[in-house]
Image (cartoon, rainbow, N blue to C red):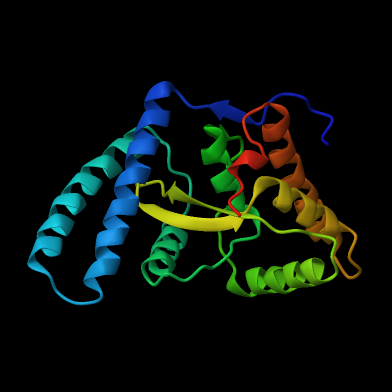
Length: 208
């Protein structure tokens, strides 16, 4: 843990929490209708999608005004593409911290990086399989809608908070990890552990 005991986050206002919940619910419904339309055109669903899109566009403006979003536009676009295609892709590095901050109802200070590196994430996925096969990690997962600075939503799938901490603790001990990689893993651990210690985040968010 870091020596600095000041909280590295700012708790959301009740309005921000409510708008995030409303936008999340709206996005899931919007996504469900888009997925249904991939199977074929349907006038009822098309009309429903148009209505939902209008509401979602309005909600994006609210999310932007409240400064809830913190994820980069390219990553949100990628997340939305995966969700629409029903691809269960895991995000294992720093961008995952954005999910934990939303689950905790806080804005992290400073905001974690949301730059997604496909090669780096693929390497982490390989290491996660090694950790699981070695019996040192029992992975749980959670999926959460995150938002870009413009308010655009996308669904990110990550390890459950406790699994994320255990995975990065395991990563730190693996041979060949650079000093920078070890430091980054410790930073990730510190953020999630602080949210758990503050009572804002727990294993109850894990989905089995």
